[in-house]
Length: 144
Image (cartoon, rainbow, N blue to C red):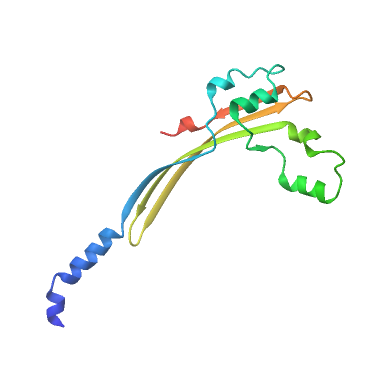
């Protein structure tokens, strides 16, 4: 037994395990289609149509309307017409997320940091499916 303790083999195995079980991770995270600032400059309230918006940016990721609210209306049979005729269906929302991820993985200690920023485009349409108002915030510029 004394001979095994004097051997460098157990120490080498332990150090090798610690070395192989540790590491660092650096990565990027992307979600959603990028929102083109050039196309945002072409949006003209009262002139630009819903069809043009959809052709420029693709289908919206969602309408700003709670899904739960839509389900309640359907279940209670309150809606007498399609939900797209209600005013909350005239808001198109686009979002692009980007993030930087860093992690240190050690045997006894782990550290993970993620910074996620978003670009948001919200478009309000009038009753004629033309842009009434819109807003854009470019948050991904804050990432390096």
